[in-house]
Length: 254
Picture 1 (spheres, rainbow, N blue to C red):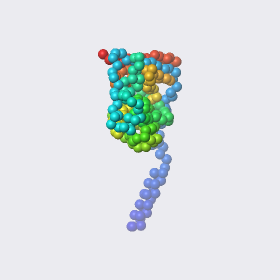
Picture 2 (picture 1 turned 60 degrees about the horizontal axis):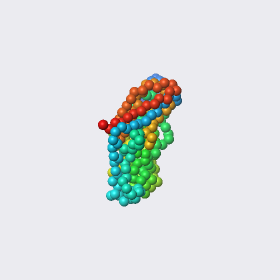
Picture 3 (picture 1 turned 30 degrees about the vertical axis):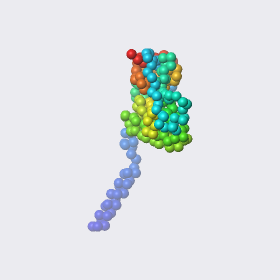
Picture 4 (picture 1 turned 135 degrees about the horizontal axis):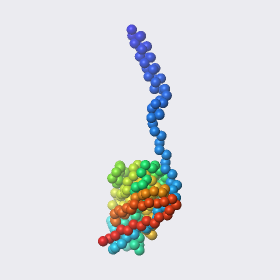
């Protein structure tokens, strides 16, 4: 009786192994294929200016006097924070992006790193953008300890240290968010911002206040602009094949 029971258990075990190794046609057939990445090959473009009307607010003055190592990296005089840069009514460091109109499309993430440098104890650039899961290369160009503490509201925060000059490391954001604030816990005046999007249609304005969103497909879009001190604005717009459309935004200080 004992031998019969052992033989029965052995047969059941072998049957289970063979079933586990057999083809899983029904299960495999039920798994949908991964969606193909959308091509960034449209022929339409948006371009324009971010403008400001009214009295321009003062820039934040960075208080570095308590840290001689950082203060020595700057010439004498006030050190300005870069939060309000307006020249002849044109706004620098505004983040412009497509907010709506690309739903359901998946874009291939750029492998080219976005560079964020700790330089003269400020973040350079002050405002930047990246795609979801795009590598962000964080550098320390200063002869002092820095850390980068990311404070998103829709995903996990992270905090990395860069104790040595010349040190580099890479981080990513797994989800979209506009904007993610960055700070340095060692130097409380340091602040930066990064917009994270699931597509490549974003731009940061330079000293001329201009932006460009290229290679769009024809369609209807909502385009938004964010600024650290001035807030947000958005407009709905339609672009046709091969069209280059001008789109301006104006922040007003009433």
